[in-house]
Length: 418
Image (cartoon, rainbow, N blue to C red):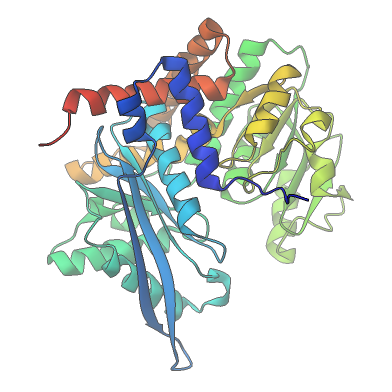
């Protein structure tokens, strides 16, 4: 009996690309070029641990395409990180940057490690050594890292400082997502959640839902989920359920987010919050809400549970939270999806603003940044919506088709060297 195997992240990324290439009638030559990554660097590097022992870690930096500008993509610290996943995320970054119209290509980096089990000293040594190993690829005009799962502004500051020490002068534009004290941008922390909020509100406006007060369930209460919860609440929506890795809670009348944040700070998670009932992550996904925001990890809405989703709008806050099989089921059931390629693009858009500010040594107020973010991300939404309606395809396929077309145009007009 044959054993069914799940497609790798990279195979899924290629599958999404192939579907978009079919929509726009991409030539075979260009298809072959864009279907593969441009560069993949694997490094194995030693780090001296606090107990005096030396541990060898494995890391990667992958660039998918740089036809439209320098590569852009985060660095992830996670024990399950692997080359196939990094390649998939690098390809996604190419399409994400193109879909929202910013002049970057796509890249991604990762180290296979559990940052929660490293001391601050070990984390710094690992980061600086990894930055040194991939320094041949990164820089303001070549490839600009940013935070991702398991990394944060402090990690970006260490990378920036390492690159600067090698260069002999401060190179603030070498990474984004840094602390404001060393060239970071106002508004960067909330940017992914704010972008998801803007698009949720635009989608609700387009769909003309008649709910007096739309309800929201958010899977994942990390940086993106917390920001989106707060901002959607401020916009007048009712947050009825949230979850983290340790559990989920639900109150159909709405959660008291201020009290929940105090509880989370004390207890280290949302579980046990007295003003709500405990439910499972699976139950959260299937709640009868207006909006569902999966903002946790990959492959949460699959062919197994897509038929049970009762939300009318899904804003995909996490990368690849919805599988290709689930995409089709949601579409057939009339559930509107704002795909990850734009739903969580707020981070890379404000990272672009940060890079521009660093290069100019001229910084903007947060209000101006939020205004620019709103303009860029909503423009992208309506461009994608226009293609979706005109070609009678779902929003993800429309986003990919638009992005692939832009990258293909740049790749074709530049030609093949020599």
